[in-house]
Length: 411
Image 1 (tube, helix red, strand yellow):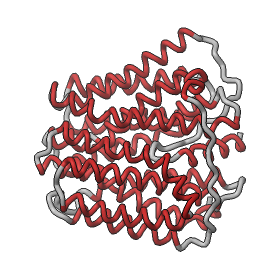
Image 2 (cartoon, rainbow, N blue to C red):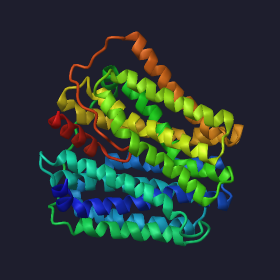
Image 3 (cartoon, one colour):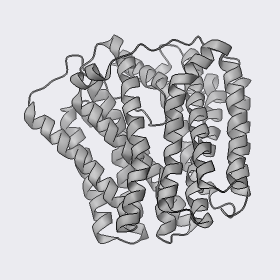
Image 4 (cartoon, rainbow, N blue to C red):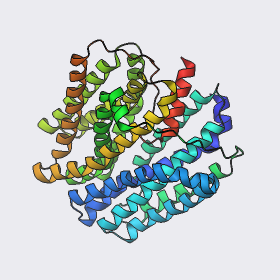
């Protein structure tokens, strides 16, 4: 691990700073939107804009890289992100914010694709698994640290928009000055949606539902917190608990899933999320209990993302894994676009509890479908079982593919 850190620290430091900036602006917009008087439904469209941009980026960024190269794309994206973060405070209009979120989503997709290509190029077959683990940890540290940043200044001012912009600008410095050469960009082959669904109906349905869960948890939590009358520090703790729960639970759940039927693990984890969010909806507990339940939600959501990818790949030839990962991430993005508007509508219709009602229904639908698949095919076993690889929902198909390849070589 020390060797990996010595050779990749510029990239890891840059990624961590980028995630501080990205994590901060996601929470900050929910806080500032409440101050500006935007409705919950309006903020739900602002949240969805990021995922729309991300999906556009996944299709367009590879073309741009092949045309003008990694360095130019990376530099252009960095400038665009820094400028966009400042414009939020300058133009407090929800329609403009939605457009800016599309731009941010597009740019961060490019960041992930470029950074992950660089990480892959700077790692050997022997160190790739450790490098990817360090990359995932750097991402989580950055996002969790971003929540503490919310307490540095007043969300009604400019400072909290300036700080992420500065951090993002600084993040590109160690990456662009790294001695590692710019990598060749390999295009991932396609896998039709029909074939992907035929291979793993549970993987496809589960990833669609998880898209809604992630966009609600990480995009609408601060909006819910403002409506619920929480302070800035309480909202940052609540959101931070979601990420900490995911960080802690990834490896234990992955270890279990490599030893028993993955479908049963998926069912149990979905069911645990359902119970936790149902408790929050029905009993409306105090802040401490809510923070614990938020940690539980994160502890089931993040592992489920990796579980569903691992389960799908159990039924694929090795050569099809990258294409399948791309398809699953696309399905996840569709669910992520739909999640915030539905959550916003429920919050406007049934009150603040609509946030937890949406999560209850989504986790519950996943549990019900997993149980249905188990009962319909009780003895289904993957032909090409692979290991569980820790994968964050912010990563591109490149990192997913490399994580699976590294895990396969380890096992």
